[in-house]
Image 1 (cartoon, rainbow, N blue to C red):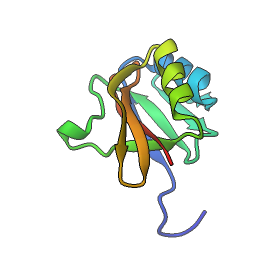
Image 2: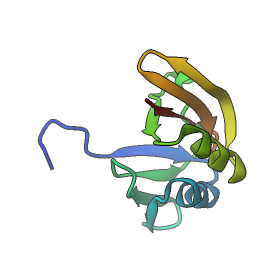
Image 3: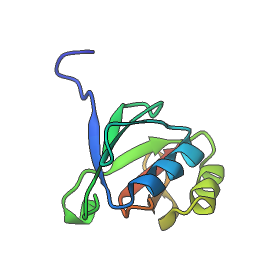
Length: 115
């Protein structure tokens, strides 16, 4: 661990089990449960966890946007859709690459980008 670096991120999950299954299937994340209302994830680039909540993380309401990287953007978009994610913004270009935004099964917004 490095001092003064982001070490962990926590996100809400209205549907904790569905969110875990989604991220396991689409992104190969690994989960460890800590009681019925919290699950830590790893193998994601930055460790973190989901806590059961009745709200979602959306940039429109002031939340940070978590952005993942993919070597194959079209394939990742297809996996997101096939495992229950909702495409919020289809693939578009931006300075530095291309990306899309999606909602996970708990309604949290994420982005995936590629060069």
